[in-house]
Image (cartoon, one colour):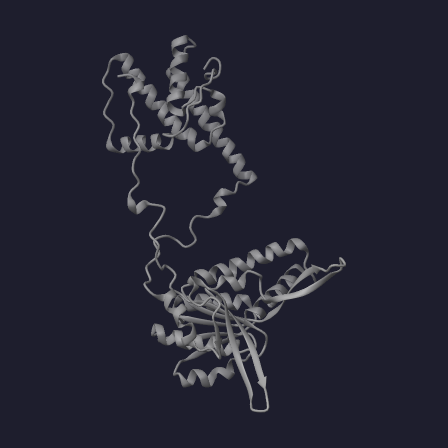
Length: 396
């Protein structure tokens, strides 16, 4: 048997070990935000949706209110009328909000109303100033602030097994324009929530609340108008409701909570940090690569110590079999994990070569050894071969 007859096989990956899964509702939790100026009905509308959602899912737990304005007392009659218990935490602190969300996720409640997220964001910025002992922020501070906000609020909020309804105040969105005379001026182009700029769009549904008033001789009418700025699935996107109730948003709620399935993988996935290499990681990487290069060289020299033509050829044949190249320079640049797998194939080649020369039968591999061999081979199955003139280092 010659080395050229060694076969390579690709081991199929079992279905349950697949990286991908079928599409399904692994996040059956409604997340909505109501933004608007003071007096536009944000808190009332959020409470109505929370009550309707509470009844829809048949919850027996209290609705939790994170109240930053001490205004939840005005909602007491509404909750009593619907026979629903409501509990409150009066705070501006993101730390309190984080604790409240954890307690609720652990079983205290199914629904959390945050009224309003604007005050939580503003207090978080002030807390950062106190921590840094500064009155203003420097440009580089904003990256850290946004990163911590995402880590403590945005990502947990999206992944939380809770229904979360938030409110937020708005400010004008201004854009600079240049007129025909070349003069620059700022023009209002819309409104935006007063929070970290991406916060509003983390929710499944984003609603703009506005107060309208009609005064005429015949009547004086005041109403609140809700405009859906964002609605996943295009069920409500662009819809306008006068004095909105839960029933107006029910289609979006039902679409979010229907046909839930258990997640088949961790929501966090793999840590992207493993893609980032620090200076210490680089040093470890270099040392590991050096170690495997020395292992390969030392093994080849121990098997074929002579510098004769045939033994040199055996060494380079082993390298070509293991790494698909006869160039030692190319091998020196390979990753440690590739070198580790290649070292096992070098040993495999050498043992088969020795057995061929002695005319002995090569021992049959155990199922475990065969699986490991096939797995190593499958990693390099599609690697193009690189012809090169150099062999291993002189004298090796």
